[in-house]
Image 1 (tube, protein in one colour):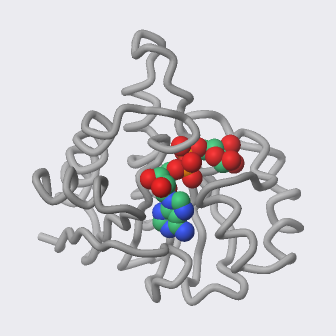
Image 2: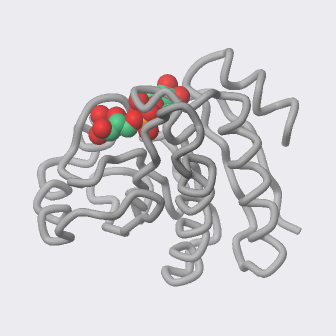
Image 3: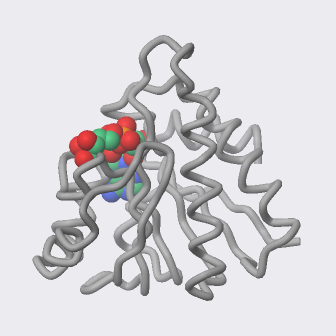
Amino acid sequence: MARMEVVRGDITQLAVDAIVNAANNSLLGGGGVDGAIHRAAGKELLRACEKLHGCATGSAKATSGFDLPAKWIFHAVGPVWSGGSHGEADLLAGCYRRCMELAGEHNAKSIAFPAISTGIYRFPLQQAAEIAVHTVRQHLQSSDVDRVIFCCFDDATVEVYQKIV
Ligand code: AR6
């Protein structure tokens, strides 16, 4: 069974096969981790994203990592939290599931996730972390991925994940 780890830091710095971006439907960049990834990966990333023609909420699409240490970026589109009765939990689980599938398709053995939807999209952190860890754990049983990093940007997020992983 693959290892799951909780790390505090900036996901753009991680030397893993794939990092996951918390993007929006346009895939054309934004604030938060998305902005950080576009700045660190360089302008070629935007050109690659333009060719993807957006992405549905609850899914993800892959690009190269360009100037990042990571080989691949999986651009996942989490749901905007709007009370919890609009399918938010299933859509968030879909992001993690699709990224684990993309890891298989791209032969990525190590993958790092940010806490998708818990920033600008306001998904409650505790519930989001439970969905993240549960969905990844389920997928690992039938996966070649051997290292999963939950990359947390602040202490509150680290604390929540550490209790679950
Ligand atoms: N490394 C790791 N995690 C980070 C980093 C970083 N460099 N920067 C921020 N985080 P958010 P969302 C954390 O808001 O809620 C964008 O505009 C952050 O502290 O980046 O899915 C997109 O274009 C939080 O824990 O993503 C969308 O429009 C987590 O990453 C929208 O924001 C997610 O916060 C997506 O909102």
